[in-house]
Length: 327
Image (cartoon, rainbow, N blue to C red; front, side, top):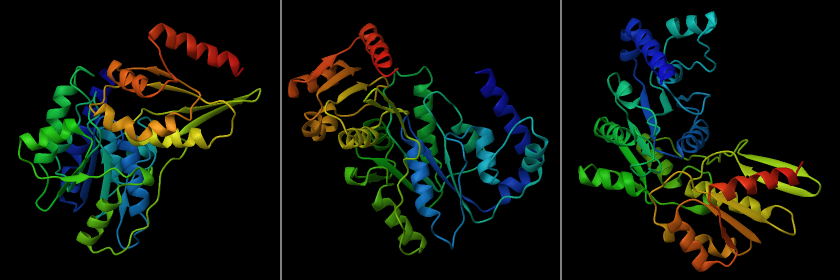
């Protein structure tokens, strides 16, 4: 908390000194916000759009934009260090690239940074990824309200995109009568930014054809020892992430496959709707250990005979056992 306050104060100080330069520049802000999936959404979108040579697209190197990250993205500063004289000179003197598109992430479940952004700029595009239920973090209710303000602050002719599975954000926007575009999930295009969004955006801006590029760099940690392989997903699960992970596990070589599913983050999704399409593939797994929402476990156990329930103690023991086996 103390660190985030220092970051916000430093960013506010920099903005105050450079206010005229930073507010007069004609940039279009593309903001990804949500509980999970922001980084994959932003990076895959950036990789596809950056192939368009007639436009300039900017995005930070880091996975998440705090207030300093927003300024670095705006000024196209790739590596910023607070105690580096070079970085400080850059952030105080570098000019923004006019007419560029700046892609950032804001509004994680535990950060109240959207309002800081809205006091200074308005977004052209807002993309809301999956939302969580109200008890996940103590800040979640305030964060959800700030995401709503983000959508309400969109520029004229701006666009809002929401996943068709995202019950949390869909209900918020409908309640406030905010117009949005629904993204249909296509699991054949794992880690592609939804094609229909890019195509519609391309037509709107007159860019012509867009090359679709997936992002999955360094996603998995693969541990091999004594003929055994553990594939570990290094990030939190979203429906699309789960599909990609399951697909990768099934394609991996091995006579016996064990899957450990941990649903720690309480995503508000239709359990049957989410897992029903994976049942045929899950039946190909020899053993599935599940830790998380009891409703999800009940659905899986009713439809599969290879699912085993784990409580916190059992989960710890199972992970320790797996670690011993691959040493």
